[in-house]
Every structure is written in structure tokens, then in C-alpha cells.
Length: 177
Image (cartoon, rainbow, N blue to C red; front, side, top):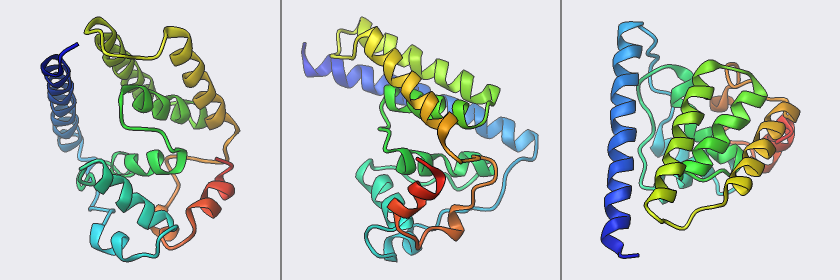
């Protein structure tokens, strides 16, 4: 496999995610669902290592991401779910986040986003990019779903801004994650 095919597949996936976020932004604007920005990167970076906030900033920095600064609260807190669960930002990791959220609290949006991530996984297979087997992906998604079911976590009511200075390990333990 040559690297140009990998970069073109990654580029296509990035374009699809960007289009999805544009549509999501348009919808949230029309429905007036936007809330003020929640994540303040300078503050999170200033927190001690090992805290939820510092881990959040490290996650965004390590993946060359910017925090969501517009949109509904749940969207702006999406990266925090990655931090709490440890799931990656690749298509399988995104599907795991959605499966976890479905287990924690069913929302149709998580089902649809998860299906979109699964479609991305299928595209990777067609492009012969090394990927997990169907059984391995299914196992990981079921594990993530059950992890969400067993957690004491409500994605609609958690307030990370009150937890940023606390140890990530303690926050995970409090939520049963």
C-alpha cells in the first residue's frame, strides 16, 4: 500500500467530518441550541498534570484539535468523553464513544453518528488500510456500550467545569468509568 492512498483516504474522511460539522452547526444555529464556549484551553493547560482539565488540553493538543467553542453543550463536551473513556479519535474510537453514550443514555443522534463512524471503518477496509476485523470492531463496540450502561454517567448533566481541577482517575472512579 502506498502512502498517497492513505493520505487521500484520510483527506476524504477529514472532508466528510468537516461537512458533517458544518451541517451540525447550521442545524444548531437554526434551532438556537448554541451555548457560550465551555472549554478554555489556557486555563486547562495551566492545571496540574493528572487533572481532568489538563488531560483534556493534552488530548486536544496531542491530536492537533481545537475545542468546540460553539454548538450545544453536549457537542462542546464531546472531547471530554474521549478523555474519560480513553477512546481514540479514529473511526473505531469515535464509534466506541457513540456506543458508550448509547449505553449511558440513549439518544438517536448517537446512533446516527455511530453509524457514520462505522461507514468510515468500512471505507478504510475497501481502501485496504489495515483495520480490525468485523468481529473485533463488534466486540469493542459492545464493550463500550456495556461500559456506558454500567457507568454512573449522564452526558446531559455532567459538569466538567466543576471537575477540571480534580484528578482524572478520581473523576473516572466517581462515574464508574
